[in-house]
Image (tube, rainbow, N blue to C red; front, side, top):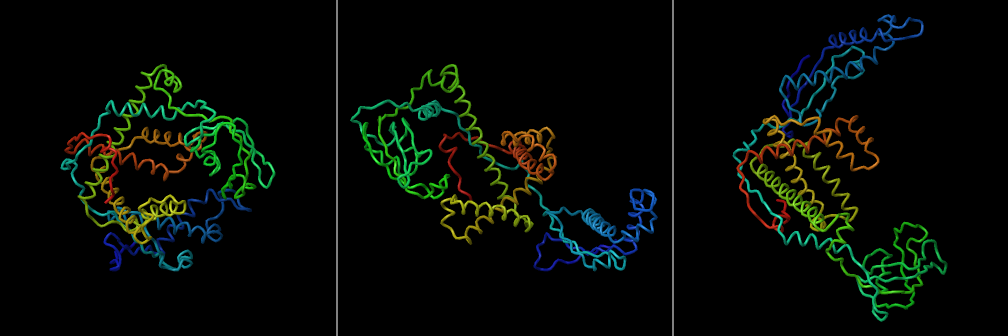
Length: 450
């Protein structure tokens, strides 16, 4: 094999390495002969005993097909050797282009010649985590915060009681109603109900229905006219006008439940003390998770500011493509962030390309820091991650586990966040960290991306 490194065109980035690789036709012939000899015992052809087909006959019948396999294997082997000999760390799949005529190579008339372009991981020295100075936000659960959490439980447990007959319904009241719906004068399936409790403002009925009940009182009868949404689940009713003959039986006023033993039992606890302990632990866990997220953000910001090196363009482009695909999905669904919705595509792409560059840069830095510290991920940790992912799909857990067992790339996607968190833990253990006590509001204050 002959390898000659070529100068990259000026348009190429500094991380691109290019090589011209040649494997002589004589070497290819040797490989072909070895391949045929290796496979001879398994060859079975009519007129010959299994494993006894002459090598000359196998060559005559299958040489071209076998040589195609030899070419592929040789390209793979020589590419790996070029990268090992030159101590290259590829940032992605290398780009390979055959230079010789394929038919001439497989027929043994020409050398195997190809060019190899490899985009490499940049060489850089990551910052020593011992030199990092960071501020860690801490927040303790106060009695006031806990009381507010407990009070929130009562807001979802509304008790409705009958109001006076003269009371008029208003938003957040409930009305007990009978109704019959008709389209073009004909009643339709599922359009009638007796004694239905409807909370005004709950948006649980067709748009416009609840608003027309505001101001009604017990004994009132009225026609409620609405139009079914265009995307209504029953196609025959979609975008059609309907009239509901409605009778108001009662107007009911709502009142949050009392924070007492009875409420605790509704939530499945023996008493109010037990409920309060669980709510307290959940609240403390939320504070810890948020503090961890803030700490990680501070670490990533610090690492980003302390590293400046060329980024592999293909890695950046791939990351940007993933981000942009998500942006377009959100745009089509009308869920684009309010600030982003005001920007042009040109501005959006520029902003998200910066984010892609940041992610690639930080990924490389964390990978290098982890490698230097010999951060390892155990099989047990991977298994736990698989199980956690499988639990997100109730009833399909086994299929999810089997998917990971058959797809190494999917397992790699599980490995990446575990590795990242371990490197973050390493930095937290090593860096110089000053704790700063803050209240809940400051802890949960959203950071602007720069």
